[in-house]
Structures are given as structure tokens and as C-alpha cells.
Length: 349
Image 1 (cartoon, rainbow, N blue to C red):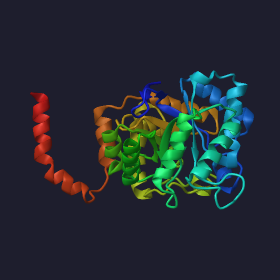
Image 2: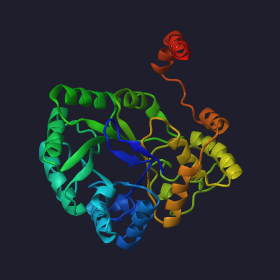
Image 3: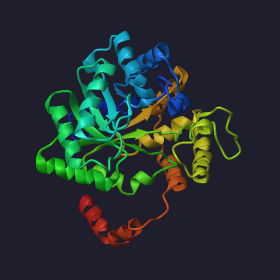
């Protein structure tokens, strides 16, 4: 297990992060993803820690708060030292009552939300507190001031963002710098070999600004697990059948699966391991979030950290999964060619 710095901080997190969306199973959406109860969750957390994972991600809305409760209790049951684990959670959606101010990124909701999350997790601080989505009703300044208050008071160590556009994150980073506020140190976003849209705007921005990347749904909701293919019918009750998310161009995904399956068979590993290994080879990725319902499934995911893809394998995967050209990307590529060549020549001299 390798460990990477989170953004521009001095905090090191494992290259795999245990996701807890399968904990609890309360609510229509969450019950389709997983319904692990305390004993089962304890086993997954224990196995993760044993494998060297020091990073656990949850959210206040997962299973209507049950995921945070189960996660916190697992740490208690396993007697995990607080300094041995990095706990991340999120704020944005509704938990509990459905009042007009029980959602979004207002100061009102954030300050209430962090107190509720700390109570459910049974912790005195949250290591990484992430805004779960963009709130068009709240000025970004209000959100950043509220998050900075939490950092100043010690309730939160670092703040992050999830599911924002590149321009929105850049605007927030500029505001934080101008006002001297705690800045977003990480982005949690969807990224897979079958869904590389993040590479158009978000990835260059993250690398430019020193923001870390946590990848959610690295197997595209199970589509890249090896259970699906062009000639493989989905089993009744499987994840993509009961909850078809995230949206994926299935034909492109099947093209990727065909190549990954060939590589996996040659290596004697699972297709899921190749999909995860591809992400772990991407320089923009800090940590990949893996969720599981069984220890055996988690072990298969963990094994991906031991796969070193060859240049030839990476080239095959790059060719089959490459994004189609899109403006302004193709124009930037065309106009910047000579200057990139000059930079490359200067680096060699």
C-alpha cells in the first residue's frame, strides 16, 4: 500500500480509501447499494486497516446517517487509535427533518451538519470535511467562511469538495486565497477508464493548483467489475440492474472491458483489478475509493495495488479508452504544439 500527500497538505493518505456507502441500507437508494450492519462493517473496516488502508470516506446522507453511525461504532469496536485513521465525511443533503434550511451549503446548514456528523461518528474532529455538491442558492463566500470557522475551531482539519465543475473550484480557490480562508485540498469525483471526462478540465486544474483527487465509483457502479460484457447479461438483482448509476456510454465501456479482460486473463487476475490498477497509474489520482459488501470483494480490490501495468498494457488501455476530441481541447493541442516541443527540448538539454 502506497501513501500520497492529500493536495498541498502534509497529510498522507493510502492510495485506496474504504468507502462506506454499503453500510446501513436505509432509504430507497441506499438499500439498493448495500445494507451491511455493524458486524459486517466491522469486518470490512478491520480488513482494510490490516491491509494498510488508513483512509475512510462516508457522508451524512448515506443511509440517512446510518453509515456514519456504523463507521464510528466500528472504530470504537476495533479500538482504532484516532491518529491511525483519516476520516472523511460530507455535507450538503438532507438528513433528519425536511425543513427549508436542512440542505445546501449555507452557514446555517454546515454548522448544524458538522455537529450532527461528529455525534454520529463519535469523534471530536473530522479530518476531511467535504461539500457534497454545488449549492446555487448560497454564495461561495458564505460556504468558505463557514468551513474556515470549523477549521479554526478544530472541529475539522481539512476541507474538500465533491462534484463541482473546474471553474467553480477555481473560483473558490481564488476566494480562499484572497480572504485567507481554509481552501479546498481535495476533489472527490467520478473517474473510470470508461468515463474519462474529468481529464478535459478538472484534471489539469487539480495538477495546476495542487488539489488532490479522490475517485468515487472507480468500477462505474459495478459495470467494470468483470460481471458485465457485450455478451454477458446482467444478473437479476445486480447493482447496475437495480441502480443504473453513474451514467456510462455502455458501448465504449464494453470496448474497454474487452481489452481489460484480455489483460486480466493473461495475468490471472480479475477485470476489476485491472480497472483499479489503471486508475492507480494515473498521476492525478491521490486515492481510489473502494466499497464492498464482502471481505472477499474487498481483498480483490486491495490486490490491485500490487499490479504494475506494463507500458504496452497502458498503451492498449489508452487507445481503447481515449476521449474523443472536443473544443477547446483540440485547438489548445494544435496551437500549443511548438511551445511544448520547446519545453521538451529544454528539459533534455
